[in-house]
Image (cartoon, rainbow, N blue to C red):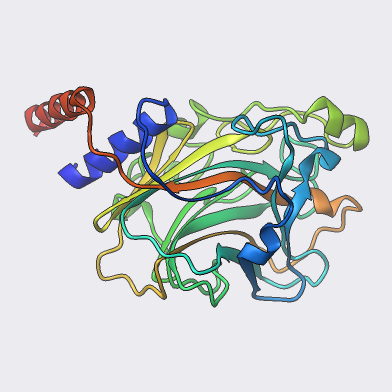
Length: 316
């Protein structure tokens, strides 16, 4: 593991554990309900939709862990009825970042039953860096470093990294789950993910509203829980972690990027729309977004880095 990758990973994991403080460059918790004027959404098809003041309690979803009891966030929908491969993304207006720590709460929802999902339940919540904000960042046309994950575990590739509009294969070595293809290092059934995620049930409030939301998520799937997502960019290296667990490490060196802004969104990997009357439950919700400076390492963190580097040298 390269030293910059190690630093980025340690910063991300330390941040999720609350051991580091750093200067905030940008933040939005959406609580004021006025964020629509500060964000621009770009659609690849008119069938997609963004709401920057969405009360997710109307879907029976509890407050995000880093919220102060509020339930206002940013919400995306895609391929509601057109039956067209499509996506949507949104970026904060006038922003640009070089080295940073991006942190946010994410909830991936879908129509039940939760153990596999209902009609058209498999869509991907997406986010990343390297856009100008002028074009939709999605699986069909991205000019950025894009990360994404399904909520239901219904894809062959449930954990995704895109570079130069190409879905990176396990052989590239970017995925923490390894380089294997049986099972694929991007699939929720891989032991790396099954040990970390899955087995979530719909909140009682959502089940009361929509009785079809029965069962529990597959092992290794991300849906139906608030996820603490961290992306650290240090030099050319970007690391992606969820709930303090490293998911991927990718280099932006030589990538064709359209800018240096962040983005969030959702896309459908299928050209068919859900036939479920509750298709609006297939949604990605983001809250409590912060972009901060990578802090100077404390003496304790430097000690951890030294030990980790020593361990890596010994393994080599």
